[in-house]
Image (cartoon, rainbow, N blue to C red; front, side):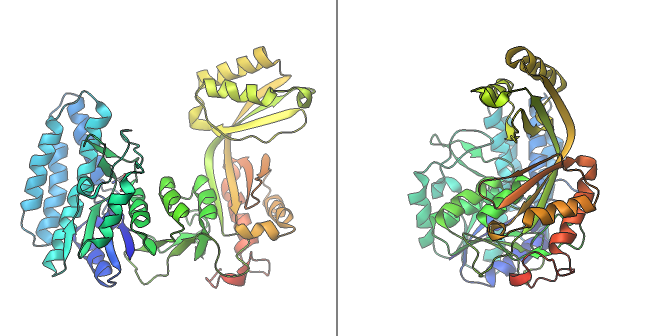
Length: 466
Ligand code: ASP
């Protein structure tokens, strides 16, 4: 049995939904289909979820929210009309949305979640109707009826473990189950959503509950690429990577799957496959517990992300001062700033944090406290950093990786502000000036993936590196 999830662009209009139907119908093992709300049809389009947020915000701001509501209903009625389904679903949606808008507003999170959830809910009803019209045995299944119980953390719910037993019975459901992603119910029966992009989580939860052989995640790219194709247009596709590699890459800017979606599948050892709704024949990317082929690629990908800064502290004899690091981190904790990395030397310590988390007043307070409470010799903040991360399980067994990588950065004239190799040895991270990120990534890509006999682990990847 396969669980497949279709993202927003796969559900964006009638034509896309027909592609979804064809994919589902082409394999009888695809018995549970999780859907997102209709997303963008083209770059400037609005996602239904964003329109639904506008529906709620307009009312909370004192308006009637009718324009946003009509925009949502218009999206659905166009889809319904194009699929010759009549107008029953979009009429029900119009009434339901008006009721959701008129509901109790005393708890903003709860109010907004009810609206946000409508996109997935109605998308699933439409898809089930099309499948039925095409002669399939298919049914919309409501998460409440299926027992998808979530914590009452509005906008960032988590699965309650007691859900699993009931969700497992979806396995016995006759025909194709069409299940809306992104939301579930609290124990009190109130709608609650995961964080944005959370339909991925629903898919993963269901795959685990029904013990699926695979969780197929259909999106709008052929595969995950070894590097962001916006930075390196000739980027090669990754055919296979492990959950750990995926996690490390996602951290530094690879947005493939919702972070939380990986955890349930990872624990249950269910492989995840990223596939393209628009090109189902493309091989996609498999995310697996362990590399199946011997001699896994040394490097599977290069991730990078800008928007970091570094707090640099130095103090003579810092190494002898017990609790110094904890006190530095405590100051950040008091400011509710989470830290990303903390490379240190004998008398120096840096803490890398996300730039967005450090406002100018917070920066001033942190520096003052470092001086006053820790009597540091020097404390400064360097903004405008980017992190570049090289990831691959195979790096562990590879002598000379760091040399190759630092050589590539030197050749590109990129100064390494900081480097860090985690204990897992499956990633190496470099801090560089954000202005040099593009050069750094290009040069690393050429050194690790590009021709000329030094390609990283070509041994398992026939995937046409240029
Ligand atoms: N529709 C929701 C969002 O846009 C959830 C999802 O698509 O996964 O965040």
